Image 1 (cartoon, helix red, strand yellow):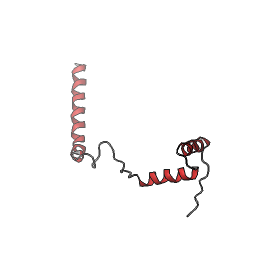
Image 2 (cartoon, helix red, strand yellow; image 1 turned 45 degrees about the vertical axis):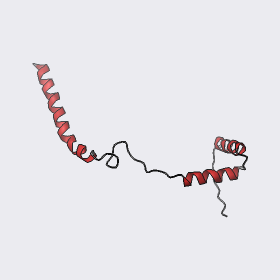
Image 3 (cartoon, rainbow, N blue to C red; image 1 turned 135 degrees about the vertical axis):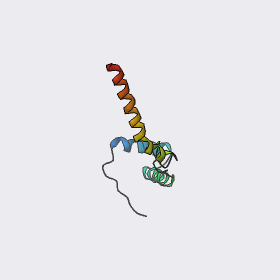
Image 4 (cartoon, rainbow, N blue to C red; image 1 turned 45 degrees about the horizontal axis):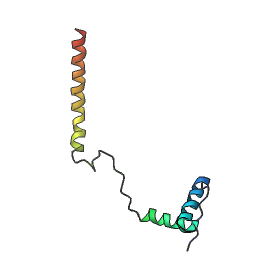
Length: 86
């Protein structure tokens, strides 16, 4: 088996690892190996934005509609400004 060295571990993290190992009746080495195994074996879903082409099939359609919507908003604002001036 290989040896793995980690430098500059914060003291509070070492204390947490020692406490966790003690609670699980393991050495710190055993505890760290188990934590690493869990982290590697747990499937990590890809990051997705709340609204994106991957999560919303209408995203591209709505993206293309933005300039038209912006023009409508600008037109309404201009109409409001014109009616406030009168």
